[in-house]
Image (cartoon, rainbow, N blue to C red; front, side, top):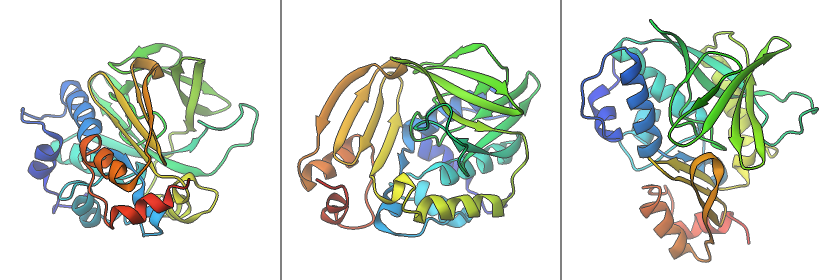
Length: 271
């Protein structure tokens, strides 16, 4: 944990003005505020730009600029903020299952999540799962349904692995599986390199953004914007047909200022 972290700047960025202390109320409030203010965003890997995980780079991008980031950046930032407040946090790594058939082999560890130990027991915090961003931490308890403002989630355990699933209109859908092995920075650097450079990782070919507020979930995949209500019920869907429309959506819906001219981003989103 670096002593150079600007906690006050982070709290201003996410719009949290209340007191902070290492308790469940603060963890929940920060988690909810974070995913509203700092969107999941994968512009850099789409453009072939490096994704840097050192703390000064993450702060400059997610706190000091109108940018978001993906799981390694988001949860690294959140972990540092929580540690500065006094929380006991363990970084973990997961294998994404969102798009995988149930019987398919496990993929690589390319997702960062956090375990936070509280007097009430351990919780899972995750502000960076871009297919279904969680709007609140979850109790580390298996086989119970846990409702948040924007979803219903369930932790399960099988074959030595834990999984988190989200209730969707078609039923339960597994987000990722993980174990409790603590991860170090080099573990995340390896996963980050694969995720930001591999042709089989979605971020190198698809523009992906997501933000969750109090009653809506906003998703952008290339030129398709969807707005969902609770548990994935579709509220609105529209196509983005020009660079000007994309600029408007990035600014007004996600509060993101891209690092290059918008025409360059739009061209990367396909037809």
